[in-house]
Length: 161
Image 1 (cartoon, helix red, strand yellow):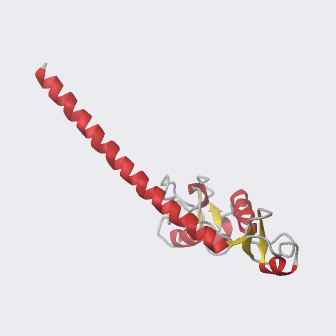
Image 2 (cartoon, rainbow, N blue to C red):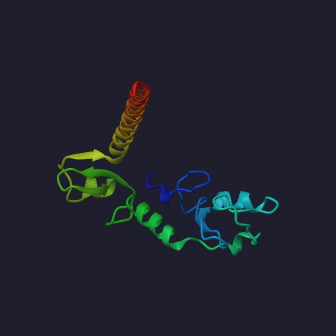
Image 3 (spheres, rainbow, N blue to C red):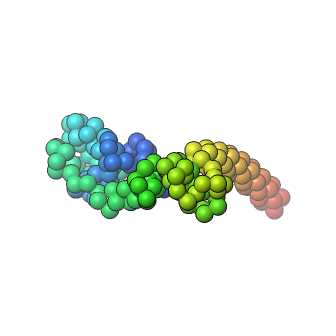
């Protein structure tokens, strides 16, 4: 999804407005998702998994929603809705460089324009992200090999001296 700030630091799932609502642990201020919090408060002597502070609250209603984070999530979800009629965005109009739903595409000012499906853009972006992650992993492996060789060279030079 996104930034690490937009995912639960326990389950690493992205926050949402359904089962993974961002909830604040009152004693320490950390935020975890509603799902993980439900699991956590069922334990004996539950503690924040991040800083190990004891949680005194045992009822879900005693934990507030992180409304700042929830607002960011709501804004992100608006990306999927057409500003004209609230329908699901399905296309990007290449001519006007804007997002449109199928209703607006077929019956509005975008007829005859060049378009691409949002799903194609998402698939292509995910593919590129995976390729970049592979390349980064390979670069990190090369860097480690170079550092190992430099350490070896230092060791050899220090033995000569």
